[in-house]
Image (cartoon, rainbow, N blue to C red; front, side, top):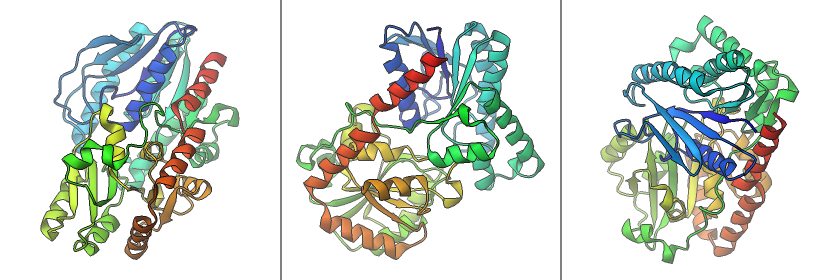
Length: 403
């Protein structure tokens, strides 16, 4: 097999779930003797801290990592993020042109948006192959989030350009059935669409009993029922219902809300809790990957939120790690959405309206009363049978070999 070159703005080591899956896949493919070279073209930034300096080049477990220069405005401001995107487009294009040879395969993720345009140009010039790994659909996500600059005529232009890169690719990997449906409606050929769901590393993430979990003790959560949210607190998620529930339960000493992670909405959430005096809400930063099983196992039940208008455009990746840790899920959003369907068919939690505080309160009380060890083992088995790294890696390997 020729070189496989992945393109993504962030890459291991960091705390982004999608970047962790990229590292899982890249390192997994590099272990196979038939894969001669696995390369990553990425930035020198960390997902959780744009100021951290990382090396320009390194080789880890037979994966060649090329980190290109970008501006460092960070993820908090949209204008600064756009400048970071532009600088990555330019420097990544130069690096790809240097390393791509005839017959190589470029796998373009969707961070930054429309990086597939750069990849399409490179594969045409170098007579290589393109696979788009779609973690979200831009510009639809931006438009739904109310970013005015990508609405109107520009929205149509950007979507047309995006669709051209999908049509010219050898394959487009959608991470959910609803996303695949959207691609078909956009006119992308059926034979160029395949669904490979995101996953969790079954060897790394396992249920950790409370009595063996050092983080529960360190964070003072012993003898508490912990309602957790782990991951990105971004604009795609609505936290008003969660915060309203925390306010209603503020006088219940046994229930604690725990936010682990960061994102654009974190400062506002912290400020809200401070103003309301919500001492039953705790905040912790992203945890090191080696502690992921412990951090996910701290909570007794996990919250996932997705604005209904974003269904088919995004699939929250945190779902897979939560199941690997054997924890049930409370999903706030569309009851006909991707995660809601999985919860219903696999019986691994509850789905409620994203604005129903009373429903959320009832489910928290039910999950508190029904939590038992047998559920942990059952949910872990669901993860093992459906959403593991091994399952996804085998599907990826088949596609790449066919190319």
